[in-house]
Image (cartoon, rainbow, N blue to C red):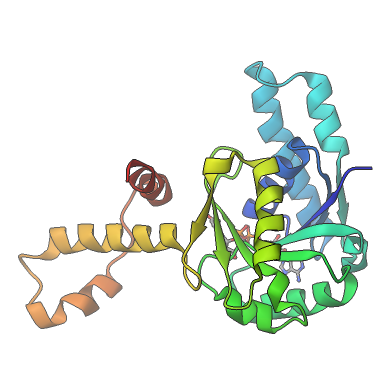
Length: 239
Ligand SMILES: NC(=O)c1ccc[n+]([C@@H]2O[C@H](COP(=O)([O-])OP(=O)(O)OC[C@H]3O[C@@H](n4cnc5c(N)ncnc54)[C@H](O)[C@@H]3O)[C@@H](O)[C@H]2O)c1
């Protein structure tokens, strides 16, 4: 049996993470709160892999083997053998708090607990557990099978050992240069996206917004159209 990789949440990010982990050879256990969410997640994975089969980037047998490596469950206890668990539930501190508390109870004491959060402090999530040294951010981009970059975010208490063990697991899924460190308490790509979109909004509104009101106007404006994350990633890579 291969190392067990846990994924909490079978939504947009969770099912993508489960897919790339299974493709990298991990035995994946994906947990959600209802069978309907798990079924939807598995359908997404199936469709995504089928696209690769159709384009002859993957054989039918490889697809079958990848799908077979993903087990689904509503039971958090099924994560007990995982060496690493990535949480990808809704961006809500209350929901994530409950998940981290439960994971801390059911997983082995040396398992690494990671979060795919875009904005919640990893230090805060680590403090919910009795193992803040083994809590880390693993920020995938959407869509996960396509967007190769993964940001690794350390909390204030994340240990060097956990960071390096985690780095090795990340490299099993992505190439070395795609597992990039980001700031401890916030995410670099998210920050680039924010600045990039603000900069564009400012650019559009400079003529109409009075200087003192500019900041407030920026916050009220609707998001710009287009794939902001892709643009942010290409900005980051050109640096
Ligand atoms: N969608 C994106 O573009 C994107 C990009 C980067 C990071 N993120 C982050 O990834 C995380 C997940 O985002 P998403 O877009 O996949 O959300 P989503 O709404 O698509 O999926 C969330 C899933 O979590 C499940 N869930 C809720 N509570 C749960 C629990 N206690 N246990 C197990 N599953 C539970 C829900 O049923 C749902 O299936 C968020 O923290 C988000 O900020 C999202």
